[in-house]
Length: 78
Image 1 (spheres, rainbow, N blue to C red):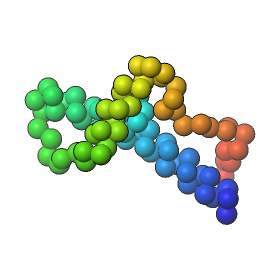
Image 2: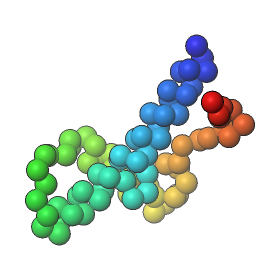
Image 3: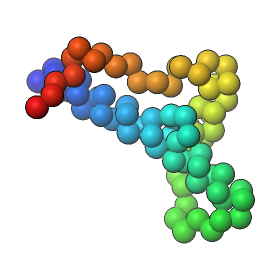
Image 4: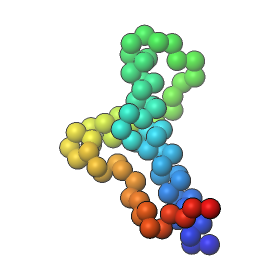
């Protein structure tokens, strides 16, 4: 059960990196397009936008903080 929870947490953290906290994340890209004048059909959650924005500031201070801690030896190939 603990291993399944760890894998679920790793999957969640990886998804959040891609969506809002990782370098070149989707939220930041959408905001950049919006600033260039591209029409966004669905509003972006203000919480996610703030998370992406706050991470942009922290990347300048220490670029590796938002990376998910990975343990390749624990990864299982099925």
